[in-house]
Length: 407
Image 1 (cartoon, helix red, strand yellow):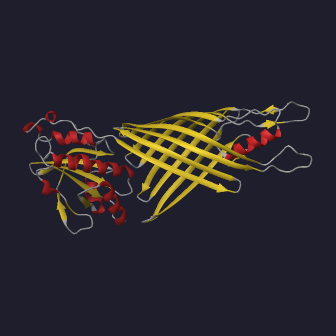
Image 2 (tube, helix red, strand yellow; image 1 turned 180 degrees about the vertical axis):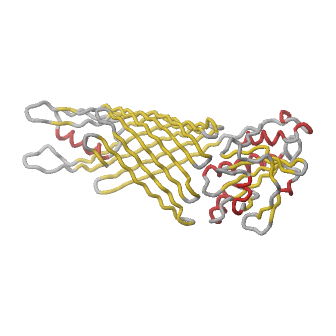
């Protein structure tokens, strides 16, 4: 039942903090007969949003509706803000998560006293005799069911057993997103519409997306003397893409990712333009192109420092049937290029929240494609929150491939 980290003390003295944007103070001893849940957060902490939302809905409101835990003890969630600047962002966070009692932990005094090393940081307290005992402490998030198990154990011998209370399963969630993009320029019109359905069941998230794309190109061939078979043409194609991805939380620190999908149609307007060029240039040997492809991938994400440092390894395999190229040499038959490609990619990603305003990402990858040498590449990104509503995003990348490709 206990998940106390080594750095968290067994008990703590009571504390008094001010409410968010108020001079009113709240003392821990006000809740002497209650089970208290401390939720340490900052507006810039993305996983904190899920924690604060679930603690408010499935702990604070849940036990308020049942008049306490199985032993009849009240339950109170205290949300402690450890970020002192940018109150507008914190105010927005509170509105989005619904946190009902938010306190300022000025200088992270309480957070440090409780051995905080990362956020979200959740602690469950109960008072016995004259001291507040730490029943549970965890940097990261193990889920609301774990926290409710600890809460239900307080005073269980004196009241109802947790088994007497019907289990309340967390509801599943659905979300639908539709995005449309378009690009128009001289001789090119591209559109793409993607519908995505996100279904979350416990620790597993399923994301299904379908895309419908159109590619329209005005083909204008170069004019040469004695070349009469090239003609302007308007070429239009559509592409259908279906993709499924799954993300499952194995432990609070480990997440497994998987994906598979496929497409039917030209991937980009360049290949469509080149296909029309070859169709007109070599009508005798040209074979109709039917581009299509499929992919499958898997990965593992490790949170090696609670909420602040992540490492991820991914593998992806892609098979493509492409529009072939052609080559005609004097006195030799027309040569048709490769039409089937297999691509294997391995990537390693490191993400670190270095300060509340700096987040970095470094990616290294190796790609092996049929008929090509190995390609090595990397990318480094840095996001810097300059001010309340301004973020500077910088990216640098590099790739090379034998015999003479460098970018």
